[in-house]
Structure formats: C-alpha cells, structure tokens
Image (spheres, rainbow, N blue to C red):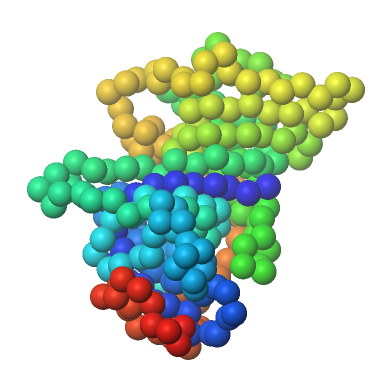
Length: 274
C-alpha cells in the first residue's frame, strides 16, 4: 500500500553509484523543497539506464546540482540528524527552468496519493469543521520494509458525514489524495479527495466524494496552517501507535560515501567506465 508523491525540488547534493551494472546505474541526491523557501530536504534515488539511447529525456533527466526538477515517485520516511524527512525512489524526473527573480513565488507543495488502513475512528478537531484519522501505510522500497503512520485531516462537511461513522478501524482501506506536510516529525496530509473500501461488507462499495476538489472551509487559511492547528489540537498517542517507523538512517553516512561518488553534474553525459 504505497504512498506516491510529486513536487518540484532544487538539487543541493548529488552523487553517482560507483557499483558496476550491465544496464543501469543510480543517482543519489538531496533536493530542497518547496522551491523558494526551501524549508525541507528530501533524499532521492534515481535509477537511470547507462545507454543514453535507452533513456526517456522527458522523464529520466539526470540530476545536476543547483538545478530544478519536477520529480515523482514512491516515498517513505527517512531520517537525518535525528529528524524525519522523506525518501523517494524517483520514477519520473523532468528538468525545468525557474527564473531566480521569481523563485520565491514557486512554492510547490508535495502532492501525494496514498492507500492505508485506518487505526482509529475519525475524531473532530476542536473549533474547526475538520476531522483527523491515522492511517497505517505499509510498503517496500529498495529491499526494505516500512510501516509508518500518516495523519489525514479532512473537512467533515456533507460529503464526509458518512465517512466519519462508516469507516472500520483495521478493516477498511482508505484512498487519499492531498498535500503532505511534516510537522514536529509527524506526517500530515490534508485530503482533497478521500474514499474507502469496506472490506468487511458483503458487497464492497467505494464511497467517494461527489466532486474531485473539495471546497475548503476557510479559503483564507493555507493548508499548512490548517494542519498546524490540527497538530496542536490532537492528542498524541505515540506509545500505543505503530508510529515507530522503520526507516533508513544512513543518509549522508558511510554507506552513501562508499556507494556513491562525487557530484557528476558538470557533465551532460556519463563517462564510459560507469
């Protein structure tokens, strides 16, 4: 049950895999987002065919330092210096141009689609028209298994009234499309679309919203401000929650120092001995 994301990043660090392979190599990079504020970093692994003729120039752009890319792929939690951050296995990378003069206005959020198992019934957030629910996400990435919790915030307006009472913890399967934020080392998603499958019912029914886009209750507030408010008004039951994620702590560690060589971004093409 993966979590897929796409956003725009500026490459801060990049290395190339030194391991020999007959057909492919991989690049490791740190990308800053949102572009403009660059308040967060994401660790990325990009598999690339060695033969240039086998590459798709529209979706397999090779990372270069200080350049901008639209990236998409599966994400799981990573960590660096004791703080959580995202790790992405990139399935699509496209080089883009952003004028430095307008870079501050390009603050592309992380858009995600995910599938998970609810751990609790949705609970209302005080003084708002929103509710929150914890989803358990399970996935495999780079031969490692991950289980982690994402908190999904959604408006309990008319489209979602049935969801609050119909979801079955540990039994339903929930599908979410929204915007992801990291707040105090926890993962939050503000849902733009949400539906679920009741696996325990005689007939499985998919409950979905009438509209693809949900009108926000307070349009003057940003998504992050809504999630910050939800975070402050939600009781943290971390001791009983499967929130102790299993994730790689080797970012920028000896593993990557040994597996990846220095930044090759000054070359358009790779050397023959890759």
